[in-house]
Each structure stands twice: as structure tokens, then as C-alpha cells.
Image 1: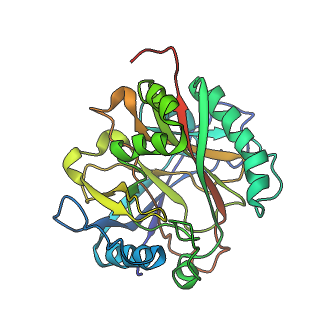
Image 2: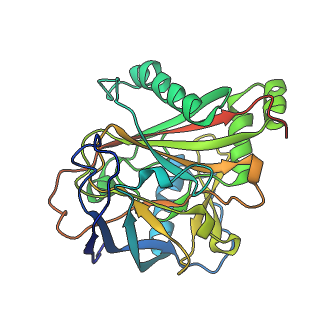
Length: 311
């Protein structure tokens, strides 16, 4: 996949003298391309459920790549002005939190150790009264290697950077997540409780290539979303949003992101369902980084409930 990037710089005034030298660098804005959705259809076709899951999964990936609309964008660097971005304003924010979990190779260790770190961070940051983590993904291959890697039997994702602009869930699939993860009586109660779906994204080493870009949720329009049905192992497809290109989109990233810098971004918010459309995300290519170390990251998808807040 070809991509062209240009870097522009501007000075950043850093009021806090205690910030690291990393924060004191010039902000770096990157001209690059991202892969939007070119289809005029409002919904992707459902895959044949009589076929094995892996066949349906790879058919979806091929369909997705066939419908890419490569468009130039300017990705703005938030370095030095991190406090200007919040979950309630743009739909995302950058938190600083040292990582305590030492290994990300064992699934049970991740759930026993890292999930607790994420839960504490979210309760502290959002004020949520209940956190349920339902999904996590480790990405440690290059984009190219992930396309040819043996598919993982029960995983929806590729093990490398995702290079399509998307939102992880639609409102309907957000509620489906609750019904799938709780007994019916508890699910009914939680569906009547204000809740958000939040993605917690952290690099496991300094990011040298394929950084994560996030679009300001306020710049996304309803007509720019296309519902895509993602096949699942249990046959109950979930819906995500692919995003059509728009000159209104405002893209952001943080340069040289380090493991102690954690992205939180909203996928869905029941409190503002009419106005908040979710945060589109994608990785992007920056010229000159093609030979850099492969990006390693962990992302955790979380249900955050706000009991007692009222509906």
C-alpha cells in the first residue's frame, strides 16, 4: 500500500518546567494518507454463515481492502497541549500512567494483571462505578506480515496495525456486547444504566512507525458512517462503522508515543447517543519510518457504567 507523507513543525510553548524533554520538542504535523471507505452503500453485505468463520473473516478483510478510498490528510500532533483533549470534548484523551504488567505473552496474566491496571485508570479518569473489560488485542507484527500470518481461529482482528478508518462498534453492537457478557437479568439492568464503551490503547515500546491517529468526534457526520457486518466465531455478526472521507475531519496523534502514554477514546456513549458518533481511528504511514522497529501495542475494550447517574 503506497503512502506519501510530509512533516511540518511548529514551536510548542510548555508552561510546566517539570515536563519531560520529550514534551518540549516541536510539535510535528504529518501530511499522509488514510484509507477511508469508498462504497456508496449504507451497509456491507452479510457473509455466508454456512462457511467456516476463518473463511468469512478473510472474505471480510478482502472486501474491506477492495473498498478502500485512499485520501490525503493532515494529522496534527497534540504533543505539548495534551490537556486540551478530553473524553467529553473530542472523545479522546491522553493519560500518563506507568505500566506495571511486565509480560503480554500470556493471556491469563494479561487478564489477571493488566485488566486491573486498566480498570483503576478508567475509574479514576471517568468516575465510572463499574468496569467490565470484554476484549483485548495485542498487535506485534508489521502490517505486511499480518496480512500473510496464519489467521487466529477465534480472533476478529489481524495481529498488526489496522489501516482502515473505522469505529469499533455501532450503538446496536454496543448493546449486544452487554447482552453477550452478562446474564439476562443483569444485562437488562445495565442496559438501563448510562454507559460508555472506551478503548484503552497503549504502546508496549516507543512508537517508531504506524502511529495511531484519532479523529475529533465532533467533526464526524452521521451520513459519513457505513455499517459493516463483522463475522464472529459464534455466527452472530457484530456491526462496526467504516467511515467515508470528509474534509471536515480533524485528525490527531501524539509523536514518539511511549508506553507510559495511554490513549483513551470513546467508541459509544449512551448519554449522548444523538450527538456523539464515536471516535474514528486508524494507523498511518509516515515517510522515512518504513524500516523502523515494528509497533507493538495492547488495546483493551471496556464497558464503563455510571450507576446512580440517572438516564
